[in-house]
Length: 174
Image 1 (cartoon, rainbow, N blue to C red):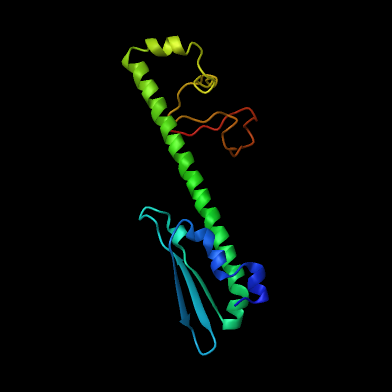
Image 2 (tube, rainbow, N blue to C red):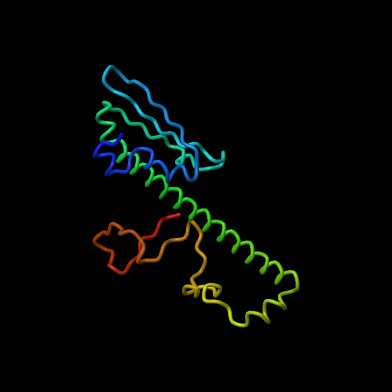
């Protein structure tokens, strides 16, 4: 039996098909009160390690007429969001695995270079990469301790009396 709204939207079960391609879905239909039904669509987790967001249920309550009219559209939006989330999570997982693999390979290269006294690394990489070059050192200044006075331009303004000139520094008495 097809109403004009469900024929246009493709029907409730037709909207579930993209989700059913990858996972089992449980449906629960219950009577909420004398005039309303609640429909719950619950995607089943494929693995315990799977992201919990992919098992988020969809629940909709309405009169049977409202559900006939609106449920297919609501389910289509839920399924499309669910499929997009699954694709995004899979892409993130692939990128993370690729980054881990690259980091392991880089670590192996560094360990081989250190293990043979650096001979292999020097022959293979005569010029250091831009990111390997140390940053230029700031102008050398003596190492200051916690109790040294800051430079004059960083010092806080000091109260001045009538005898002090502008060029005098504030000194803490110690």
